Image 1 (cartoon, rainbow, N blue to C red):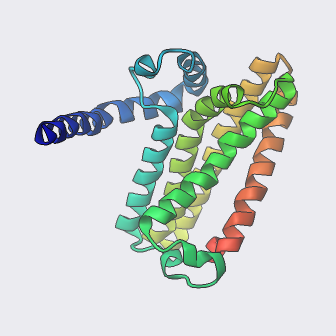
Image 2: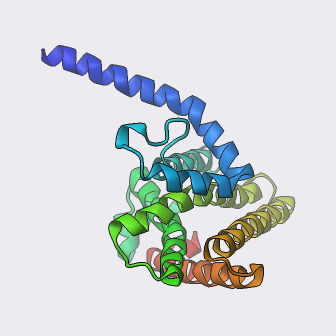
Amino acid sequence: MDFMKIIESLDEALYTVMGWLVFYPLTLWRALVRPLAMMAYADREVSDAPDEQYDDAIRPPLFLFLTLLISHGLEALVAGRNPLLTGTRGLAALVDSDLALLALRLVLFSLFALMMSLFMLRRQGLKLTHSNLRRPFYGQCFTTAPLALMVGVATLLPTFHPSHGRTAGAVVMLCAALWYLGVQTVWFSTRLRIGRFAGFRQAVAAVMVATILFTAIAVMLGLSAQ
């Protein structure tokens, strides 16, 4: 009986991983070209039964995790072992494995999804509860994942060519910022029924808070020096 349970578990695990090969690129493409539609999709799916949610896409938090896993893999392939993994000063000593570094990056980029969600709930006047926060947070994971991937690619480009790579990296970083701010501006504007400029101010404020928290954690861990 135990052997059959193992076989059944392997069967489900294999299908899940193979499914990622199909649905991950589809989800990434949809998140890039139709981010607002994907956010609305996440909003609808949260209300469905657990076994019926995200039937044609990757679940948002998992999508963000897989994206960071790909970015981390690219870094390991192109740049080698991250210097932070050998750090022994202060909190950097806690990041002693690739899994720990991946978990750290997941937390750092999730700050953007969290701040956007909190700003939205505050402006909507909704009570801060798990159910109210989950709805916008899941939608934000769909937009944070492409941002994380673009930032990861931008930081790797100087590895190929110090001069041109830095220029190309700066261009990719600028495109990522403009794309993300544009999406969030329309999201705030549409959801709150306010003007584009007011939506832009909300998006910038949320990004600034998330960036400050991101930078504070990075500095404590010595990431800024890597």
